Length: 331
Ligand SMILES: N[C@@H](CCC(=O)N[C@@H](CS)C(=O)NCC(=O)O)C(=O)O
Image (cartoon, rainbow, N blue to C red; front, side):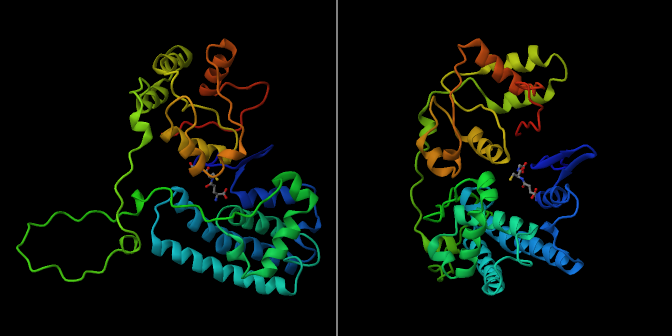
């Protein structure tokens, strides 16, 4: 439904629509003309203008700050600095506009406010601490006013501003590629070479032992299972699902279901990193949205629960009476 296999996707009677903003624009017009898109051509243009602005100048830069810290993208100190500086420039422009405007366009909430506040929400919840946002007081006032509107609250729930910028999840991606070893020359002591930013900032620390390495080997080799999953074209239940349970190690907790875009991302990280009967504390600490979900351990000695997992793996539809929106096997 999405050519890149991403979410969200909206299913309409005329076919699917992907890209969040396209979905928002479509939904805003579902009930015919309304004030969400402004009340004149120029207001409509301004709604579009602020929607694009907040997605590209605000959300895009929040993502470039937050994503690498969470390990979704490679981290580099100069990259983060550039993202923060571009974000500040965007917030500054937004702050100036909001100095004399309650909402972005006209005198009531439009689609531009819905999109912008949802974009800001990612920042407020993850990287934009109070000491960061206090430089943009009109953005703060605007964000808290709109996000606390009953219709927002119904969807987004209670929002709390992050108290700290999350630590960098993994520095692996930040390491510059090692140059090929040159033949050793008896050289004079090396001249003061400029250190890469990362090194200059922090002294190298001994690599901590991964606590998962201490666990006994598992019969579940995830790559093997994924190959089986992908290559099984018929008798899926007898081949792929059976293969799963044959390999399955009850001491592991790394297989599960996904329901929303956020859990998709969470699970993607989990499936790479978890071993053992409990979700390890460091996963709970590192994956920022784990605590937003209720994690229930499946008891596979209960046939009904085991069957439910089998049905999830084979994308059974309807699932528990509901149509399936999307299902993925991360490879
Ligand atoms: N520009 C797209 C971005 C969609 C996107 O990146 N979705 C993420 C989840 S928030 C996703 O599906 N990631 C899984 C993947 O990259 O395969 C939009 O706004 O809809």
